[in-house]
Image 1 (cartoon, one colour):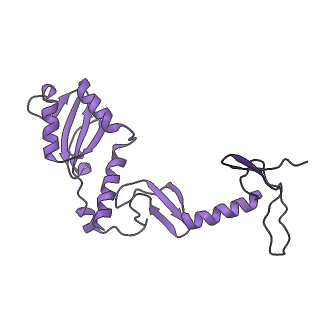
Image 2: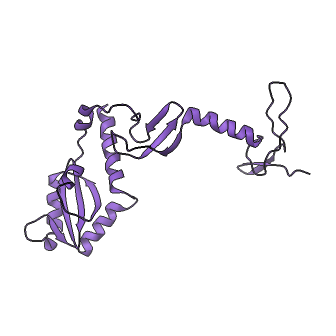
Image 3: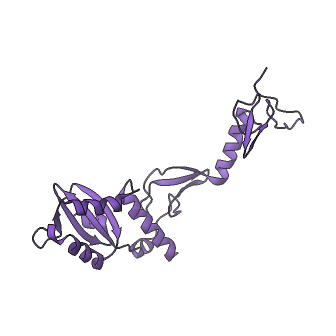
Length: 203
């Protein structure tokens, strides 16, 4: 005897049919078996049909074929009609308006590591800025302009190397960077989110 499938509800379990409850165009029941543990009275074929219908309407979250031209994100939503960036909703394949992209200014204080030294600087275009710097790793970003950069320079002044923007590695600076990195797998993804949020405000 086939084992019944169950649907879980808060506080109770409801026994469901062991065969698919879909009524076919002929008026007859589908009658195919429902797999144990399936939360609906649907056979595998009709579960897949339901999934495809929802995916067509709501899209499927996945990695974009290439980084978003508007915000740099790699996370997208795939629809039958094409891809949208999951962060800023730019449609893959559309030409990004250069005026919109250049208008998106997000000032950041950045932390770069080179060997046993850490640079604390600021930029509104870190990718371009970093192209002219020698470094091993982008450690973190925090939103802020030159005023915040100067506060950070003063905060860690005892570890500053000469009058440069470079600092010797130290516990206080490491703790500060750990706070900025908490919950952030990639500093660039955080920067991309800030840019997309700024772009949305300009829209």
